[in-house]
Length: 274
Image (cartoon, rainbow, N blue to C red; front, side, top):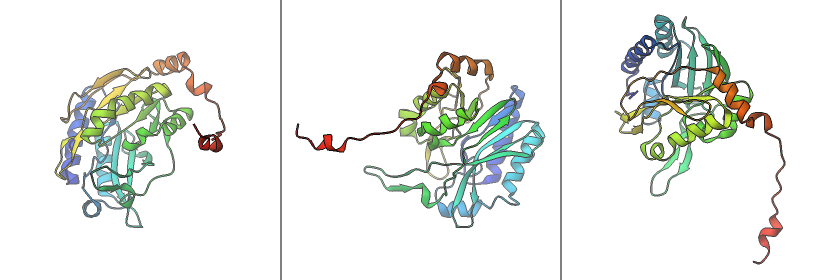
């Protein structure tokens, strides 16, 4: 998608894309991070984001799922919290519009970038602390969002808890997308023997940001089985074959072979003269 600042327009765009996906045979549809509104700052979010209770945008997404009879996974929207911050929340709706599961993005990007301004996602968002695996459209779905893709421990935990497909809705910047997007997604698929479905924001947005796009679906062997080449809005559709999950995990049983270990750091050795 290329979400703007107005939730109604973004949800209309989502509705049309879901219709196209369902016409192409989709039973599960994932949208990108910040689908509902891509605001630039805390003040912009405060204008469009409300609490989870009686939330009109969540209700509209539920109506879209119900109207199309599809598992609709809203990649994320901002949900207002009592402390003045927001949750970056991913929500899975069933084909009847009922909420099946939700996940609040755990990892927040706090960094001082060389030559650029300090970036503190935690000033606007409160990170979640619960990883989520849930049934969806005949498979077990593990939920992640954007920056989470850089933390393999989360993906291993999801797969260890039974996830066969892991979602990564995102709004990657262009420089990091060009350098890291595909390699990180493929690595997470290979490490866990899981399908990885990554729906991305793409292009120049109303808030002045530019995102990388290149949505893709990756199989458990790390092969990209579907992708959007570029940053234009659109859909991709692929079959999920759970036999390929079992095959990949059987051929490289990394999850089964993982062992706990302790860590020894020899501080005295580091002080010895060379």
